[in-house]
Image 1: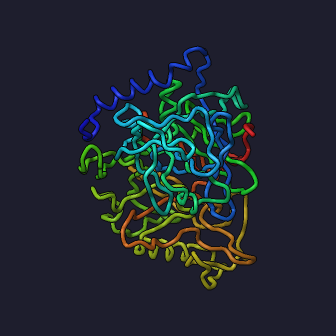
Image 2: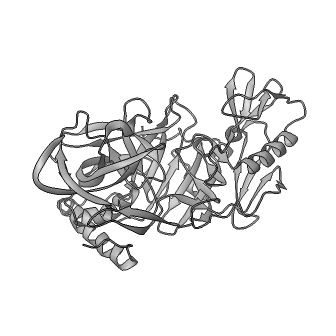
Image 3: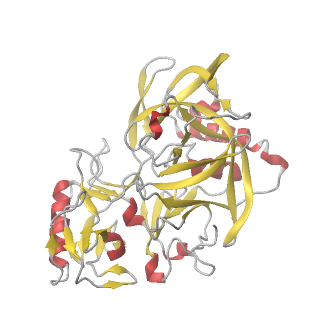
Length: 441
């Protein structure tokens, strides 16, 4: 089979095949949840956002890091992996095509080579590096939602995921974290897209990250409403901006080497300007535009703990922020990784966090913007010292703005893939609630 860029018609053909494959066992039950959820908590050491699923036969709880722009679920299968329902995907199968296979090779189950078996592999990655992964299927369970409380457990008998060819991929993750759960756009086997295909609901999900390392936030998969408390639907105040779709080159080694174009799973949006206390900053507009090489523009990522800014943008933003800070609040020496820090002795604190200048990321129109308040713009680094929770990008290339996890905390952010848009709630503190105030624990 010659691998080539997946056309829309080809995608939907394999999407239909995938529905048939995954629905066979489920057809015995009339249970069709409209919304599923995962609990997610910030790891205090790695600053990654950690969730847990149950997979395999017998079921095993697995801690996984959230990877917003990841193509799929991947799990370390080399250490203590035992499952009677693990099935490698055979080369040239529908599963291989859906999971964007790049090569074929031997099949392994629990580190044992299977005779007369040719499985397919794709690329799996963590925030630092990447490697090959064997594409496979196994049992997976996830909790559903009934109103504003947990509902029945949903069981998927053949959820597609990948097993890295080396366990080293977990070294850059938090303690006892066994893999990453990818929610990337345009990927047929991303976590949310598979559930949407299986249970026939809209391709959308929303994240609500808690600022606490002791209390869970929540990830909703499927239809709103998204209840953060018994009476408050956090999806009702969303401000939407389009998702920018992008293509990238990928190397395929089977049946022969070729470079093809595939969709990028990353979430890009267009930030047209940045305002601080209502004043538009003089930023280089060219840097704010995403080019064909995925340079410039704005990306949303849970892989970075704090928003990263291109050096010239950081310089302008930090200087404007300092100017707009209350005059009695004085600068102090930098505390890594931050460059702009203040004495917190004389800064006010309210239910919206520190008394800080309001930052607006302006989208397609001047009146369409996301507001970042003091709770998300300043971070306490030690007693008496707070810092601007934005960092200067170290790499010479990349996005002009990468919105990080800290800025998303206690905001509901909806990723509506069916309509190709992202919705921002602004801080839930305005509504006197937070992401930890849910009833799904």
